[in-house]
Image (cartoon, rainbow, N blue to C red; front, side, top):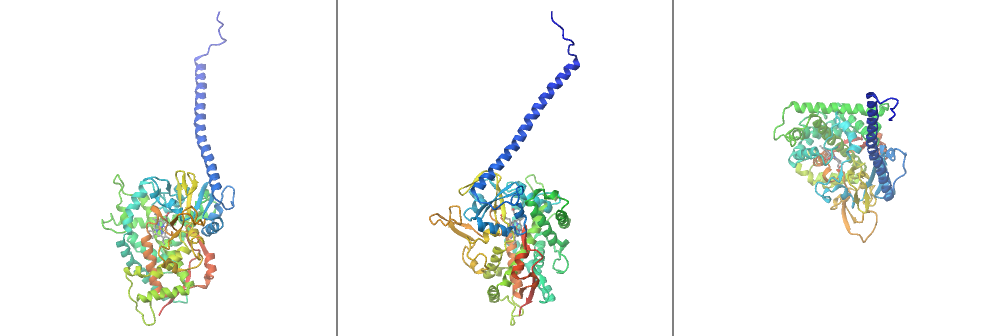
Length: 557
Ligand code: HEM
């Protein structure tokens, strides 16, 4: 006889059993999913440790400042470009640095730099090296776009938008537009020279500010068909106090590059100041964009950068969104004012410290009829074609850009697939970084690297280093095949090199030629001589004297 259980399971109990079963299945699935999820993370963490170990085995590394931040403290210093130069001199052309979770290998060997920059070395469309966007540059988008949009500078090389925009704006920098830009430089420098004369040589002027004003007028017209009126008075802040806003914003971006959580540290006064600067910059660009758009669609032959950007259409025939235009305008505005302005001011400073170089520049300007002298009060008007005749002055500018590289900390590329750098294995995710100031002041690559010698640029191919191809500029191995590599790269290199360099070169050469034809510049006492200038130098994405470059402009003749 079958014994009946005390109570047959009721329908309710069966549901309850199903629930238990369902729960068990759900827990199992969740466990599998979570295990897979976490194992991915665990694997990533293991890969990260392995990559760090592999890199540390291959490259020397300076002492770590902090177990979590790695070398981020040194890299957040306003003299990080000089720290990189010192580290190169101590450790050699290749060294490893950890910036929080980012593995970075600094590469200063000209024989290896082409591997980092030259896409022709890789299969077509290979995207082995790219801009370190998520790792670093995403921090810059907070400044250049109110909505966090990327721009040509902060986009991946592999992205459709970068290709579209880069190709689209390149014609705005063609020789015809640069020639037109020259007339804008003449106008702006004429205004500056009138202001300098009115001020007199007794009163010091911040030439860094003045040169940024000239550059702002030039980019205003070449870029946006706009006169910012920056030359109307040297005593009133230019357009929304743009230079101060950019400097403060850049300082904040620079700090965020090596501390990605900094943006959340709202209790920090510096972070709040940075956010204020971002907002002020957004407003400047918003106004500019509104003004340009209010003119209606650009004509087919509108040569401005803005005209080129507004005419762009993607594969679906769509124009760039307003947010994207805002981000692109920001990149062009910064590129056009800040970098060029500092280059002009730095060059005036170096020339003021080297009377023999100034004599040679005077002789060159005199031979071309541009120099104001006691017998030549009204010199010849400079023409665009004359710029190519300024051989010595061009050497002095290059020398100043070598010794005080405006993007001195340098430029990076992230490695998307494990690759070889000479004999070294570089794991995926590593950032290769060319420290521009360190390369350009390397005692291995340059004679008298710390001396201002414009004459070195009179030699052919001075931008290149020639030496053994065995992966070390300092190996001294005479048997190795000799290769040529770039040792001067103020505008970066490769497909992502500076798109605006033709405009920049014309602008700074013409501005300096005109200013030096009419004035001799003397460093103001308040700068504290060469030591004071060196002490005041700060790197906030771009390198500049912290509180300006104050000089006396002494009229010639
Ligand atoms: C002395 C003046 C200048 C210096 C030293 C300079 C330097 C640089 C450097 C080092 C880069 C990065 C290159 C790389 O990663 O390999 C760059 C990129 C760029 N620069 Fe300049 N620049 C100057 C002037 C300008 C001007 C006048 C403009 C525009 C009006 C401009 C717009 C840009 C843009 C849009 C990029 C990003 C290009 C891309 O990623 O495709 N720059 N510049």
